[in-house]
Image 1 (tube, one colour):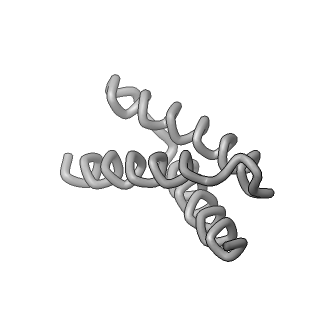
Image 2 (tube, one colour; image 1 turned 60 degrees about the vertical axis):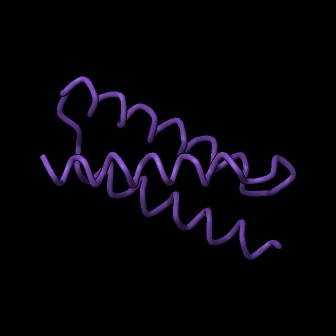
Image 3 (cartoon, helix red, strand yellow; image 1 turned 60 degrees about the horizontal axis):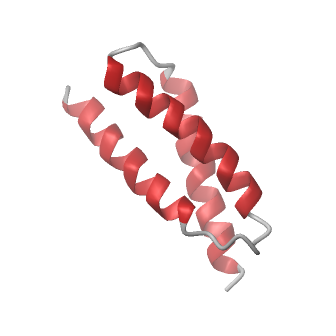
Length: 74
């Protein structure tokens, strides 16, 4: 349960940060894809459906990489 709560908070934090990437940024399009995947995972978690931990981890890693790259543009 605690693991799921920490993932929930991390996903929400990452979603909020990815939404703030400027639409003029090269990374905005990639960010929208990751946001969509994270929203789906979060929705499944909230309804109690099983999620693939590898998919969750991969999307988190890619999301943070996109944030890093977008930050480097500025």
